[in-house]
Each structure stands twice: as C-alpha cells, then as structure tokens.
Amino acid sequence: MRALEVVDLVKEFPTGYNLPPNRVIEDISFEMDMGDRMAIIGPNGCGKTTLLKTLATIYLPDSGSIKLFSQDMLKHRSRARKTFSFVSPSLNFQSKLTLSQTISYFATVLQKPPEIVIPFLKRTNLYKMWNSRIESFSEGQKAILRLALGFLKQPKILFLDEVVANLDVSRKESVINIIEEMEAYQDLTLVMVDHDPYVVDRLCSKILVLKGNGTVHSVSSVSDLMNKLHYNFSVDVTLKSDIPDSKALSISKAMRKNNLKVRYFAEDEKNLKSIINKLISLGPIIQEFTTSSVSMRDVYYLLFEGGLDEGDV
Ligand SMILES: Nc1ncnc2c1ncn2[C@@H]1O[C@H](COP(=O)(O)OP(=O)(O)OP(=O)(O)O)[C@@H](O)[C@H]1O
Ligand SMILES: [Mg+2]
Image (tube, rainbow, N blue to C red):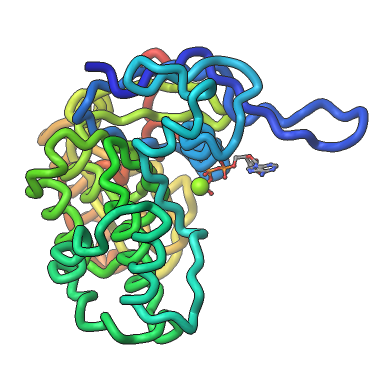
C-alpha cells in the first residue's frame, strides 16, 4: 500500500514587495510504500526542512499534491495529522516541568496513554530523569524526549528532521535498534533528514537526493547510490605542513583538500596502490594516512562538488 504520494510539489517563500518569490521546492515527485524508510540528503539550504515541513502540513504548497494512504492530505489536514509525527529540533518545552509532567501533558493533548513511551525512555536511559525538570536536560536528552513524543502519537509515518544528529553514539545506537526491532514499528514509514552515513545506512532503504535548486537529483536504494559513485576506496591523508593544490592533485585528481587534510578517491585496488605509492614517495611531509571504503559521507562531495556527471545517478 502506498503510504505517501507526492506529485509536482512546489513551495515558494515571498521575498518582498514586487520581488519574485524564492522557489525552494521545485516540482518534486516521489512515492513511498508503507514501511519504506527514506533519507533526504542534499547540500545546506537546498530545502530539506522545507520539504519535510510541507509534507507535515506545516507549510502549504504553492502547487502539487500530497496523498497520505491514498487520501488528499491537504483536503483532510486534521485527519492526516493524526497519522504522522513530525519531530523537529525546534520543539521546545516548559523548562520548569518534569519529564513525567511533560509526557503527561502531551499524552493528554494527543489522547494517548503515557505508558506507551516508557520502554523507549528506559532503552535510551532517559527514564532515570522521570522526576527531573527539563531545565536540567542536556541537548541530547531533549532530542530523546522529542523522539519519545514523536512515538507517543503512535504514528504510521514519522518525519525526522536531523533529530538523531545531536545524540551520542550509544543513544544513536539505541534509537536505531528501537526503530529496527520494535514490533509496533514494523510498518512505520520513515522520512528522515540526517547527515550521518551510519544512521542513514542502518535505517533507510531509499535515499532521495535533493539538488541545490530544490529539484530531485535521484531517488534510489543506498546500495545503488553507492555503486554509482565510481569510487570504491578513499585515502585520508594528514600533512605535516601545507602543500600547493597542484602538488596534491599530482597524486590523483579525485581528491578534496582542506588545509592539512586531503581525501583521495580510488576506483579500484590498482588505483589505490598507485595513490599509496605516490604518497610514500612524498616522504616526511606526510604525517599519516589511512585507507577505507567510500561511504555515505562521500556522497555530497562526489555528487555535488565533483566526481560524477548529472546523468550518472
Ligand atoms: N519560513 C521561511 N521563510 C522564508 N524562507 C525560508 C523559510 N524557511 C526556509 N527558507 C529558505 O528556504 C531555503 C531552504 O531552507 P531549508 O531550511 O529548507 O534548507 P535545508 O536543506 O533544511 O538546510 P540545512 O541543511 O541547513 O538544514 C533557504 O534558502 C531558506 O532561507
Ligand atoms: Mg534543515
């Protein structure tokens, strides 16, 4: 069953009297089946949050349609809102309320039993704060609370805007495991914006890549996207002192350089060996280097800054 069908979506923001609007979302179409988990990635300011907010009916689109479980979401906004949660880092709390009071308040508003989120709070180690005021919470603990409130609604669709980004490694792992394991979430359709390749790899089966101009670059599976990057290996180099770009480029043209850090991309093992040999021949100017497989974190560079042609993905 289709959970979400987005057709020709356009969202503009006014820029001032007599000035053309800023078209942030330009004609976006995609669809998701129930249980699909999709990450939205793209450069800063390309419209990821705007797209999520439009899907969550916080913004009205200028044109296009959104169907949620085959129903026009814009015509049936209040009914639609009962079926999804939008978890945003900008959700704030009453700082003087305790965790228990905060959960009770939202449970009353949402007409759900507060007990729903207790297992989640226990797994993420937040339950120990049950009687503590929100003012004593760290940013990571507030992020867990926002997620808990997202789950409290027992949504069929969950929109997450960089919510996991603030969490430490062990909390991230708990959240990933909870979403993966919990019976109740088996049919959960997830749309998330996240920059962490590990999180995206673990949680999402599809990736929607947005371009800087608010159009869709591609919608594909994680493995298809990775396979089309042309490069399989990367070499991270730390220099002892800076070298001219021309010297760095003489080792291999597929590279990005940021002061004393250089990252090279290799297509195959032969190419990797050649880069390593050239690095060794540079001698003492190299502090250290490590090799690894290319990962989701390279997608931005390889898609947007170089390495791939438009038609490749
Ligand atoms: N409420 C608004 N009013 C006017 N312009 C807005 C509004 N919200 C976003 N924009 C503009 O829309 C564009 C896209 O912003 P958006 O926050 O969606 O990007 P993003 O991809 O989420 O970026 P980031 O990776 O930094 O979170 C930006 O140019 C931004 O200035
Ligand atoms: Mg954003």
